[in-house]
Length: 368
Image (cartoon, rainbow, N blue to C red; front, side):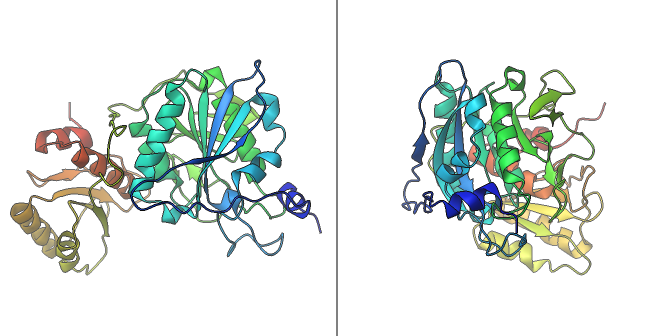
């Protein structure tokens, strides 16, 4: 039976970093790998958070039901020695969890660590290894909160490190190569998997299992890799109207609770009231079609907005499209953002103190 490079490294007895237990009041990243400096290569910092790229299964043909976040950043780097041909990689074990366990506090903390790294003249770019289930949410958050023209690259894997033909090693090498490339500057946060380069603002996970899952069907890719070298289709540019939020000095628990409600036939209007009663300061509705909601559900939303001032954004459960629905003050359409990205945007806007007019300008298209 053929073994992956990660499996061989494990059999050789290389050390595996254990998950970090974060203290409740403050999250602290821990550096675990820092290799000798090569003055001719750019310095790239890799923040490892766990996920499938660090996953382990009991057999090499197992691609589901594995343990995410089982391997440490030290092993990831040792298993891809080609990283040292393109950069001085510095590994930081920020977390080691499945991406479903990433919290708003961890996102704020991650941004603050990345911002400090990129503010240093000694760091030319950052890579974040991440589970794919919520990779798009973290990438979107970083795209809105990291203020730098230096590259920020999200990377993950669809097969665990122990699988035959594991995609993690080549994805990691491509991500570090991209972060080290001068051509990657000024493009915002990016997503790298399956030889593709996508904008973190637009890219979403479109398939639960397949390698080519990350895409932006309407907006397309920024570029691709050939022989591990990045090629771009366009000159550097940013999404139209993309805001920037400063969380560099924010408390880790600063982001307000925002819940997503899924639209369907016969939905229960009481769920929206229950979410607000449980502490939600904002609601995102994954609406049907272009953001439609049932009549009874809409009446309940209007009552919630009137009584509690809760901000409500109508999004869409469809793969793509625009939700422009607005019912007046306190309700907004999400534009082209899907529900999970709308939730991130609304959290940041509420934390920043956006008023009704600012929220409307943030989410909704202006018609010519």
